[in-house]
Each structure stands twice: as C-alpha cells, then as structure tokens.
Image (cartoon, rainbow, N blue to C red; front, side, top):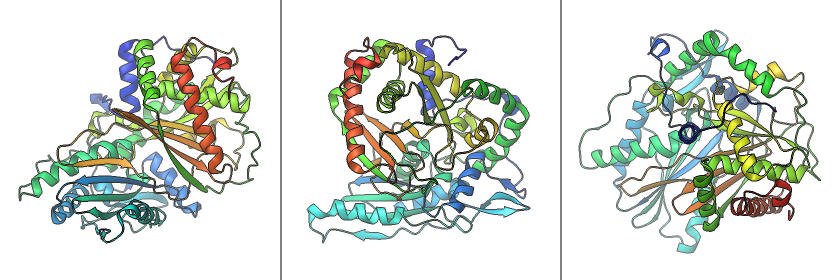
Amino acid sequence: MTVDVKSLSVDRQEVLQRCLQGKLSLRSAESSIQPVPRDAVAPLSLAQEQMWRQSLEVPIPLYNESITLYRNGPLKIEALEQSITEIIRRHEIWRTSYDVIDGSPSQIVQPADPLPLPLLDLRSTPEEERHALALHLATEDARRPFDLCTGPLLRALLIRMDEEVYRLAITAHLSIVDGVSVYQIFPRELATLYNALSVGGPSPLPELSIQYRDFAHWQRKWLLDHEMEKQLEYWRTQLGGELRPLDWPRVSRPSVRTFRGAIHSCNFPIEILVGTRNLCRNASTTIFTVLGATLSMLLCRYTSQKDIIVGTFCPAGRKRSEVQPLLGHFLNPLPLRVGLSDDPTFLELIKRAQLVISAAISHDDVPLELLARELLPTLDQSRHPFFTVGISLQPSTPPTESGWDVTSMDAQSGGAIWDLYMAFIERPDQLLGRIQFSSDLFDLKVIEQFVRDFSDVLKAATAHPEQRVSQLTSAI
C-alpha cells in the first residue's frame, strides 16, 4: 500500500478530526452553491439516490435511524410541537419525498404541515418497567417502513416517563439526516426555538440561504465537471491489486445478503477513555484514528489477514461552508485500507492510519457504488463492496441550557448494511459504543466477545503503543 502524502502536523490532526466530525468549512467563490429555480426538477444527491434504490429492493427498513432527546424539567407540549413544525418549515429536506420524473428519481418538497406528535404517558406503569416499555415503543416505530413516494420521512413520538421527565423519540429515513443533523443542528435549533416559543416570542433563527436540493444539484455538476476523474485515479491506485474480502472464522455466509441485523450497546471503562486520550495527546493523533487502528489490528488477529479494509462514513458534503447549517444527508462511505504484513508497532500503525485517512478525505466525494462499478470486475451479492466492517465516531453534542440531551437509543430497525459496524460516542466521562451486526452471521454472544476483545486490545495498545501488533493481540 502506498499513500503519497507527508506526515501530518498537529494542525492537520485538528483538520482531520474536524473533517471526520463534519465541522470543516471550505468554500471557493467560483463553485459556490447557489439556489436553483424552485420550478426546476430537483435531483437526489448521489448518496440519496443509492439509498432510494436500495430501499425499493430490500424489504427491511434498512435506513431507518432512531435518536432520542431527553427532557428533564417542565415541558410545554404545544411549544414543542410549534418548534418541530418550524424546523420542518426551515429545512425543506425534512418535508421532502421522492418520485420518478422523466425517468430520474427526484426530490418533491411537500408543504410544511405540522408533524403528528403522539403522547404516550407511562406514569401509571411501574417505574422499573418504564425504560423497557419506552424502548419497545421506540423499536416498534423504528421497524415501520417509510413510504418514500408520499412521505413524510420523519416520525416523532413523545413519551412521558415521570412528572417532569420526557423522551422525544425521532425516527427518520437516513436520506434526510446524518450525524451532524441529529447530534448538533437539530438539538441546537430545537432548544433555541423552544426557549423562544414557550414564552410567546418569535423564532430567533435566521432564514437559510440555500436548501438541500440546491446542494444536490450543485454536487452532481461539480463532481462531474471538476473532480470525478481526478478522484477516481486516486482510488484506482489505493484499491488496486487483489482485494481479498475478510473471511470470518467459523461463519457461514448466505449467498445473497438478507440485510437482517441487530444492535448491541456497550459502555467502555473510564480508564480506557483516559488512556486513549493520553495516547492521542502524546502521539498528536485523534481518537478516531486510534479506534480505527485498534479495529484493524483486531480484524487482523481474527482473520489472519494482513491487508485490512475498514469502512467509515465521511461527511464529504459538509466541507462546504454553505451547508453547515443544513439538516440532511452529507455522508459518503469511504474504504480505509491499511497493511499490517510487517507487524508494525501500534505507534507505527497509528501513523499509517493517519496517512490513509488524510488521503481518503482528500478524495471522498466519489460515491462508493460508482467506485464499485469502476474498480470491481464482478460484484459479490453476499457482501458490501470493498469492505464489510465499518467504524465511526459520532459528532459531539453541544450542551444546551434548556434541559435537553440527545443520544442514540437502542431502538432497532432490524436491519444491518454491513457485517459489523461500530459507532462510538465520546462523552466527557465515558466512551459509548453501538454495534450493529448482521444476525445472519453472528449471534449476540459472538458480538459481546468481540467487544471484550476490542476493549482489551485498546487498553493494551494505549498502555504500550511501542509494542507490535502480534504482541498486543497475542492474548486474543
């Protein structure tokens, strides 16, 4: 594996971290995103189109995403409803459905009607049973498919847990959200609007200068006119040669993917988070890089393979300053290929991973499906193209002063895109994990063991980064 980039400075580490969490703003005047005429047909973004096509083919609600906002304190439900309605009015993508116009899938922006907000009151349920019941209700909602042609592609459910304890469960189709949307923009706007509307004031939020459909129109033209061939050339080199898929030991793979899946949530010990942060500081690296290097090392141990490709969701579209305030889906799956054939030390592996991640981010606009069509002679219908294991670090949630907090809930749609996908959430005092896995390949006991092994290897690697991969994984 060869990556033609220089070692990353501390400044570039910050750029890398900000880009992976969707915080980096870049803008060039000659290619700025401008509003398109509202009577023009609006195409889907490239990522939206892939999800739209797959949603039509797969019976499982594969792209249903669930988040929960917690409210501790008094709640004016009417003001909450008004706040959600105003967010839907502001962001066209949250009132968009899809249809085929002149042979092409297109965005149809619907009127800004209020979103139904059913209220379920669990105060009469025994206190020790409320959490399980709330999770059951959210899971039922997450398993209901969306009608992509009629919309809306968003549902909300308000659950009253106690006198002044509420959960706002949101289920959305992934084509209208990403991590920045649900962990940063939506909670911030909801808190701001609720504070204003609950006392009878007007919305303090400025109008948006562009909408998601403007981005989708710009993206297609910009990529085809300026970037496609240049970025494809990088991936031809990076993904050249034999791409051997990961062979999980003792796993029988169906000939065609069913996309059935489940979720396992976990909380890593505080000493692991402290050790990881210390290593990041001493090695001038990022938590994502350390987590990704650990996953590559563990996969090498599990499969005895030395050429490891791990996928991640990169917020490619959010590099543009114009889209920073927008709700919507700006992600693109990226293959990160790391070689371990020389049994590097963990410090060497981190540096190697940094180079791979940095170069991939510089060429992250080409959709994965297009890469597959260009670079893979045949598509294996039993696997995701290029990689079957993914990892991500969710954007941090900004603190609010209104009693709201947001987290991924354990509600499950019953689907899984990849064999195994590890999503991490870094909090000030804890590192949370949410493991989505194919239930055709693994049972819960296998996944629980995988998490324990990951935790053990991460703890050893952060304590002794000078040791080689074979030493750090020898106890697995």
